[in-house]
Length: 140
Image (tube, rainbow, N blue to C red; front, side, top):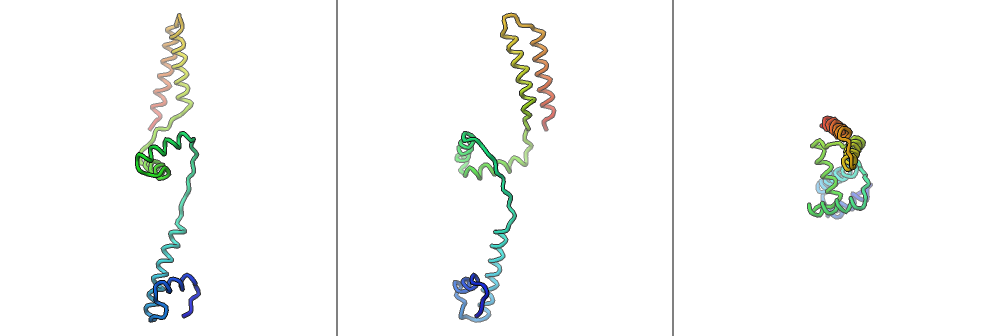
């Protein structure tokens, strides 16, 4: 029997059909072809890779959470990411939150002075409140 593929010959050899009937060989060849196609599809399946960078502390925290869920940290991170696709996550705008923090800090500085200017403190707190309300109204 002639075969062009050494892999096919090895498969037929391990199946024990070499030297057998032509029907057995044809059946084994069809089975090999089906197995080969399945393996080829698995090898050439389109997969995308996503790489992120975390700090060592963040990685340690992720590993602790993953261990509590009895998962590897990469599997845990992937599942959390995919779960978050179904729920809208709040997007934090750093600049807006820093502005609110600045208003509150300025108001607290005015309050801690010996002679606080009540009008200025009230104005700063109101500015912080307005900025925070505008920010919260933007969230989904």
